[in-house]
Length: 408
Image (cartoon, rainbow, N blue to C red; front, side, top):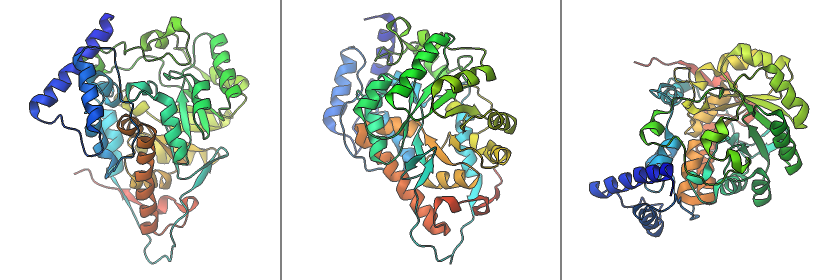
């Protein structure tokens, strides 16, 4: 076993020991005792990293509960890699807090019947305005990896964005799961490799390409440094060659001087609509519109890249005003409730993307766990629309939001 994996597994063993010592190692109500015992056994034996493999529906009261539940099944290094942010993690916390500073203004006695919560984005019909955000390394959470995530998302009636740093190859994900899919790319320096990835995604049937623009330098993720998790375990190099497998080696291939010429290159080669992910200013959003970008992600990478930038929900209204509804806006970062989905749409988003809750649901229940996360959001979002007196998604607008509340 290599040194990086030994260091990682030592961190996982330590957290299991701490749980046992505190008496909190027993699984939560949605977990099977056999899976938790197996996780303990693997870590104690210092064997290669192994996430869960079970599939079960979860009884979710709140998505906020999932992180604590996932602590029982994901080894410490992998858990912190998923849940952590950059630096002081201010931006990560602010993504959550921003939703708490805005209130919903309901329209009672509107006569609204049970609402239609479905929507369409770039031709894809969604059962609710929520999609699965692009994330790498799903096998850190579950052996089924991106195939299980995609299957659970499809069962919920939504679409999944598959990352170029997925553990499972993009063709395998497409073949192993139903539902519409987008492909996210960290643009490589080598344009030949970039072209190959884009052609593969088009041939496999991915309906859009997302270019992530906020990774021109690695984020300062201190949890990973403390856990000696700078090189996570090899769980499948997915879309990359064996020579560049592993997160550090793959990140070294990314283009660090991204500019609009690179976006034009992707637009030329992709053969499908191209979105950019990492938009935080109205100026950049307006430039994207002018340059024919098909859509934008208002995203700060879940607080994992540049700490100190504003919450995505904070900047969303001005960005929405700058594009005048001419291209779809996807917001990610901090969405944990159906009310958050409603607020995001009222502030100008076309839909939201969820990240960490999906991986926690995946860890706890595989594809059915992912579907359960969507089920909870669907219930809360439909309730919010009904109580606010809104008949359909298209009718949600800023008139349903109060001004920003005082943080005091």
